[in-house]
Image (cartoon, rainbow, N blue to C red):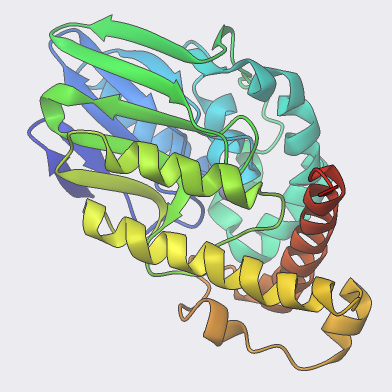
Length: 292
Ligand SMILES: [Zn+2]
């Protein structure tokens, strides 16, 4: 558990995303939920021993940020309106209950009995939504919840001015491989500029250690490297399968190792990035006005 503000903490060593919380004078506000069921129930018990959990804010629809929601059954979940729409679809993509149970038998036996447990019948999707921004005041703290599409379409940052921090979800991967498998890279770059404009001392990334705004340039460079690399192939008329048929200098685009037990997805991720960016660059070129 790492302190990131006077009353703010994040856990950076769980399997899954970095969940966090802020302790206000009127209970806790959580940002994302622990991925592993046993981590989620332990986390909930430790917090509720001291004060109630008022809200759980999801930063994005990827399974490692939302699948733990189920273990906070009485907590109001806040999410961007598109996240509410796609919640169940992304959850299913993360595995059916049977698939999760089998996976945990291998990777996390302590969590097996909690999968599909009758005490947690709902996946607990967002019930409070917003389109562009939502401000919540809880106790003495203000939470500015801001739609910042990029890594995913509903991507959301949670800015807490009194704490001097922002939780960005996976718009920031700090020194671990960036997942560009479904991103709009140009929106992502714009989101990084908006994060840079916030008055914060610490950024809590979706993965990796808390960092400062100094890292945002490096995050942007990784996105630009990938877009440049795929863009040059597009210019030469090379298709995604052909690109993937050749050895790809992944570390020349993104020097960091894949984080948080995700090494089994290393090669698959490269394939997803190539396909996504190839299609997005082609689409963007088709939309550009032709000079007359
Ligand atoms: Zn993600």
